[in-house]
Length: 484
View 1 (spheres, helix red, strand yellow):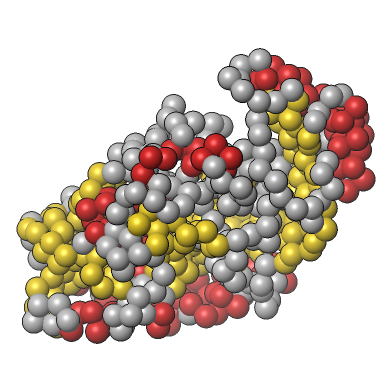
View 2 (cartoon, rainbow, N blue to C red):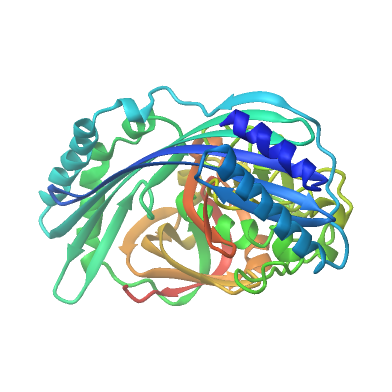
């Protein structure tokens, strides 16, 4: 497809584009879902296509094609140029793009074992072994298992001269145990909810998370939740486990930190942001312990890459430093609008048939120095520890939120006490993060993956990462989440 990319760039220039870039993407995918001792879903697929983006008279145009011929590419380029001309008449001013060096590079995501070389029988075997253990626990009524694997091969070429090859291998795995009582049903997930854990890694990550070895514990916890008391309604100290905190970061820092949203470009569908540009370097977003970064260079994290989808090299951008809001997720177009000299490198597209938009990379809370999770619990006189997301809700400005979790435990006099079910907590984003007074160190730090972040019209689903260690927040409103 590289020859077709070069042809597209030449034709776009002939038709009047002042800038153009082309993404050639080939994807291979596999998904396995088990229900009890049966395979409920086995899907394999592949796709290939080319997306063409052009700048004509200061307006953007985009088109894509799966017709991988000169005629098919020419038709896509002509559509993109026509769209660019039309959009230029609707803009108050022409697009200005921040400068970026020209790159000739190759990047491959870290992996030890290509998952597409592992047999389906071996993959299903892992899930069914976990299911056997789950179903052997009295009170369990359903066991689910999940695995998915995606390999993306990308070639990016721009009229500025960049030529970039990238290969991504994404793997995920997870299990769920359901217990049903007379008037209640409870679920426990491992390693996390939403299909488990997701990483830029190969088959080795499936072995590392050891689904069969953790099946017994989540099954027993699901059954125990049936008779556990409900979470009390009160204001108390709250400790969040890493996977729950990852989603908290995603919703209350990742999305409001998207510069297109902060500028009002996403209001029609995805919403706006309370982090408007006037708050940059002025808002005390969190306590001095809170340091949040968008780091696309983190090895193995789901939101990592070598270069984004407009050819900007991966980098680490501070979004909150010592509690102060100091940076956005930006693009080559949006960066100059707030005086930045360079894009943060956050433009990504779901596939070849979507135009890139600003997306999270790995928006992560840097580890603290409060010891381990158990050290934080030992330092808490009265509180609740919650883990594993169950549901969430947040307003369109990402300001007020409510989350519920699968499980919780009371903390009394520095010790973990009775298990609690249907736990939830609520708050206002800056107040919540300003109440943070303890962050566990790197020993409990994990780069969690969120594979299904939705944004844009038409909707694009993107994979993002969120590193986190368990953390404590003071005087948070907690209560009962209704079982769903």
